[in-house]
Structures are given as C-alpha cells and as structure tokens.
Amino acid sequence: MPLLAITVLGHDRPGIIAETTGVLAAVGLNIEDSTMTLLRGHFAMMLITDGDADAATVEEALGGLTADGSLSASVRVVPAEQVVSRGSAYLLSVHGGDRPGIVSAVVAEVAKVGGNITDLTTRLAGDLYVLIAEVDLPASADPATLQTALGAAAATVGVDVTLRVLESDDL
Amino acid sequence: MIVGKVLEVVRAPAQVLSKPGAVVDPTDPEIVQLAADLVATMRVSPGCVGLAAPQVGVSVKVFCVDVSEHPKARTKHGTFVLCNAEVVSASRNEKAREGCMSVPDLTGDVKRASRLVVRGQEPGTGAEVVIETDAFEARALQHEIDHCDGLLFLDRVADAHALHARKTYL
Image (cartoon, rainbow over all chains, first blue to last red; front, side, top):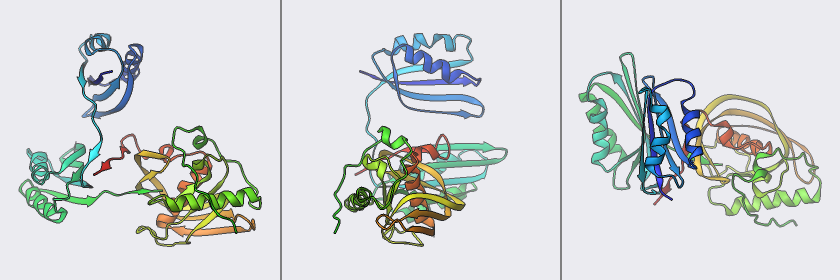
C-alpha cells in the first residue's frame, strides 16, 4: 500500500483537523505520523498516511475542505523511510534581533559539517527572532569546532547561538 | 536464598501498562519473588535504571530502581524495591527527555519534581521505608510509581511537540 504525504495549509478555524481526518478515515487511510501547528496564525498540517486510496482520490475527497479557497491541500505518494541517524543529537538555539538571513547563515554551518536537522521551529515575536533546531552531527564533526563556526556566523547577522547535547534518559 | 528470574518486558499498547496496579502484601512470598525477578530483569537490560511490575505483565504496585551508575544522579540509594509506594511530597519541577523500555520507539519531554519524598514498603519484612531524594533518582521513582498507577510518560508529555521518534543510531 502506498504512503501518502498530505499537507493542509491556510486560514485557521475550529474543525479543520476533524474534517480532514474524517475524510481520510472515510477513504480508508490510516494516519501514521502527523504534525500540525500555527505558523503566524496560518493552519499548517502535514501527515503521512497508509492505505489503499490513491492520491487523486484523496485530493478529490478533500475538495470540500478547499472549495472556498481558504485552505489548500496537497496529496502525493512517498516511499517508506526509516528513522535512522548517524552520530549524536544536539539542540541548536539562536536568538536575536530580526533581520534577513539569520536562518540561512546559521544552518549553512550545520550543513558544512554534514549535520542533519531533524526538527526545526522559528518564531518571530516583535523584533525578536528565535530558532530552535535539533541536529544530528556525524562522528566526523567536532561539536566544539562547530560551536565556534556557528558563533562566527551568528555574529555576522547579530544573533546569539548555543549548541548543546540533547540527552534522553532511559527509565 | 531467592533467585530472580529474568522476565519478558511488555510494550505499549499492552493493556497491563494502562491499568492501576493492585496494592500488595509485601510479605507475600510471591511478591518477594517478583521483587527479585524485577531486579534480575533490570540487571540484564542495558541502561535500565528501574522496572515496575506492570512492565513484566503483573498488575501490582511493586518496582525496583537503581540509578547508582547514572551520571545525572546525585542522591543514590543503590538497588531497592518498593511496594505500594506513594509520593509524599514533590517540588522543583524540571523538564527532561525520557524514554522507557515499554515504549522503545519514542521519547518525550516530561516535567518531574527534582526534590521528592516517597513512602513505601520493603518486600519481605513489609517495613515502611521513606526515601528522600533528588535529581535523577527522583525522576526514576516518579516514572516507576506512574507505571504502578497505570501511567506512562506519554501521559505526562509536556506539550504537543514534546514527543519524539527515538532514532536508531548507527
């Protein structure tokens, strides 16, 4: 059975998730992973579903949701992926005055050492810009060297950056 | 001499993990054996610092803990088993990411008290024990007491984005 990647974006109001998941259940899709948040007040949801319905059928079934133009939905087939990581996990925090180029300047340093961002949130609150990312660093990357490079990159865009080990404890 | 047997650890969504465990008679020989079995199972499980009876499929209020080797532990009471344990007082919440042998593919950010007093009974003698602890041992005790009450860390995750897929590190 194909996996489908479904996105729903647009004007927020109560009931979008209920309607979307109602449609997906009706066409026989199981929701596997999903995430939803508000991005500057806009509803933004992404889901991976498993089931027999094909992408075109699902998109058509979601038509009621998108008919008035306040929401858009997209559906496409995606292959199965494994959650595999190499190296160790770090939490990257960046904050400072808003200006263009903060995200790109900082994450470029992560990419240079082969770091993989596995979770990312950015928020603009007034003049304050904040970025929080979870980063997997390969064994070949030295966290102290990366921290220095991140500091230098952050300085060019006038923000502060910290990189710390992300630990989880088994109980 | 009681020898503990290594038991199979059950995984969510096993019903036994979501049901409050029964209060036990700590002097019951079956409970004494269970206590030994929990410790034996904890010992053979890499990185395991605590195990509650519901995790081995037995719906009772018994758990073992041993954080002696853990870098985040401050106060340590070694290996011990408590029956019918309850939290007497808890303060100074701290958030940390935790995982559980019964939920092997997920981790979650959970707030737990870092100062804790717990009261319970010792298996065998039934003597009342009061444990005053902090830091990681406090977290472990709260996690195990939750298991005995039919709760998983999933019931306490801090927010909707505080649940994470555990990655397989190669």
